[in-house]
Length: 402
Image 1 (cartoon, rainbow, N blue to C red):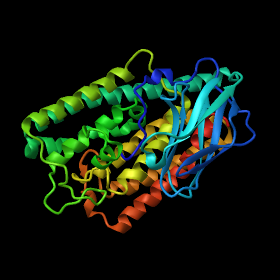
Image 2 (image 1 turned 180 degrees about the vertical axis):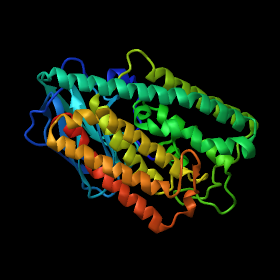
Image 3 (image 1 turned 135 degrees about the vertical axis):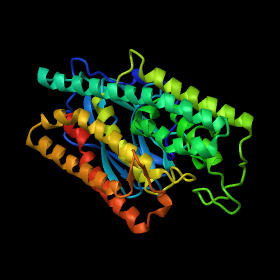
Image 4 (image 1 turned 90 degrees about the vertical axis):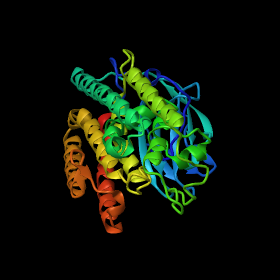
């Protein structure tokens, strides 16, 4: 993962807004403007009717930023749009029930929220047709099953990988398992991010842990032990890779291994709880969030800095985005010709991106080391990610009927 927001630990179940009986349709005539700067987050309106609420984000600052909608405790994240780059204008739609929320931004996607402001949602969500509700229920059921299946797949993979690492079986086993072990996690990463500090413990990169003042644990802490830097090597931020770092001792390896297993087991327990659910907006926004992950960390080669296995994460993110899109596709198509055309375009762009990725390998056979890609290769992949992101960014508004 790249730099991203930390929220206090909280159950996602409390955040998943109602899908039962009434799904919202916004009454807003237009999106609510949000002026994002390095030290500000000005939201043009402080209230909105219940339903699908669209914010028009404009990053007028000097670096990447993030827009968040927090619950009334100012801790739980109800919705967020990460990786809003300088000069970028992008819409973000969240499904909000009546109540009190808070809006905020996060400069460079680290640190405390900036420009925290109360945001009130009034009225009641409007009812939808029985057919539409059936499609919505089907989408949620399908995606929940997927998230749970991926977390179930992840846990034994992590147990095998960390056992090899703790035993010092680096050459024969641990290195070979690293990329494949991460695949289920990368497919459902936006869901994991909703659980506060769990995702940073599992997947924070070293430079992000340092920036946030956190203990560095998880996959990438282990990765650096498995592919240790040599004198003169640099971290992704250009700093000496050996500064404040030393290979883990056997005891330390056991601690990191046990910690990763415990964190992944906690994730599995959370997503398989009876009261865990997701909203339609969680699903469709999750699809674009996975593309953001690709653009922010995989295209740059910063995610798996030491192993060079970024393309495996890239492919898993794309697969996860495809599943999220597939879960809400029927609902998008139910909105008429416009929804059908959007679904067709997204389909075509997914196929084009998967074809582009296939030139470098596959999840089954493995991918080439990311370091072997030329700048032209990276640009071609980046262009295709952007080509998919453009129609995919319209999916939430279409699904929610904005």
